[in-house]
Image (cartoon, rainbow, N blue to C red; front, side, top):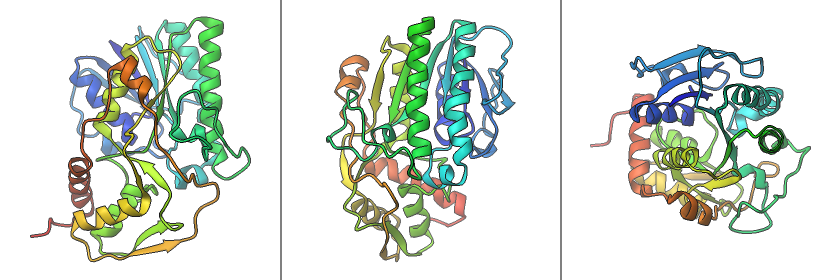
Length: 314
């Protein structure tokens, strides 16, 4: 295939590029580096990879045929979409519109990177794809939540009105190498703080839950989804739920850190629970996560050690 990946220099986008190149496909990557990092794709030395520095909220032109478009361009961390609220809304709306227009023109499959944040602070648990969510549209997190909800609506509108073959992946908490040191999300925050023997910051009392999926498992699920005929949303994530405090303590132990956990006020509209029901992914895609938390954290901590220049403990 010949595929376009928007947001290719991001955490997940760069891993997707690696996967599709390894599978023998040609990859065109786009990114404007608002939150992406050129270091994430600097290792790619493949003649089947090309990169375009571009803002996909503008008209997108790609010469030649395209078989698939994977739309992953968007700030994804709370600190990012609070710093770039307008850009987050624009890439979810205008960027999705432009990418769908290109898919329509090229006869390509369109895969949207959506998020578990469309469920907001959920009133049902675990979250299934038929749940409509509990989102505060005017809260500080609303710029991301509603951008993704709009993107899903636009995607389905193009499918119904124009017959564009569409896929929607609702991504739950994912971690792994290439997350930024100052990403703002739980795992990179905890690892960075623990490796520096700083206070490990937990918001609220830490009883809120998340479900952490290693990035290679997520990418495998996305590849399977693209190859499937599943038009509607599919949850991809690890259903093994744990508290945020438990994750912080696990990382402190895994790093051999002298850090202590401290507590800070809970951000506005922070979800109390987050756990995917992956019945659909299991039945439709034959997918479920395989990387154990201990394995995933070992790889991720190793990456952060190298990034921070901190040698492994003897």
